[in-house]
Image 1 (cartoon, rainbow, N blue to C red):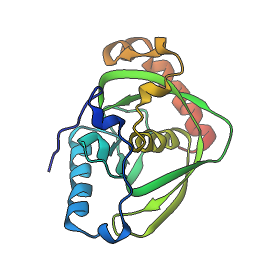
Image 2: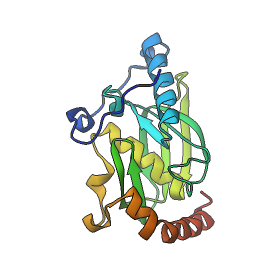
Image 3: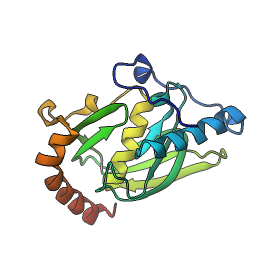
Image 4: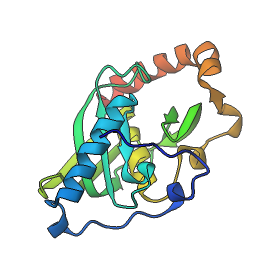
Amino acid sequence: MIRKIIEIGHPALREIAKTVPKADIASKEIQRLVDDLIDTMRYANGAGLAATQIAVPLRVCVIEVKKNPRYPYKPDIPLTVLINPKITLLTDKRIAVYEGCLSVPNLRGQVERCPEIKVEGLDRNGEKVNFVSKGISAGTFQHELDHLDGLLFTDHLKDASSLSTLEEFAVHHEEAFKEKVMTIVEEYGS
């Protein structure tokens, strides 16, 4: 079922999400939540969606990038369901990237993200997930996990003057950013 995505200013976006007990993962409620997150993310052409973005304060998020029209420069990421995820930064290096968000409609802004991270958590079957993500894709995972801690990309703006509407981003920044993405993908593989 497609759910309403709440937007910046809604207090639920600032809540720290609660851990899902492992015994609850197989429940109809959690499985329906995962399905709704996937359906809603795909319907909205998102690269990911956290439960907090539909006003459900649980540590659940989904990520998927497949030729996304909102982010044509992002490398593909297969559908990934994360329950109770955590991230470990694997380097002190940071890359500056433009991000947008379904909960911050029609805006892009530049943030700094760690280009190499380890992601751990559980999948929708309660099985352990543990992998390394690099480059632009690593930023996507960090963005979604930020939501679970009550943070938005706007909290990480490198410089508030980088904030642009989608229209102005397309005119003034997108081409240069696409070139930068290509160099990041070359260096990190994603």
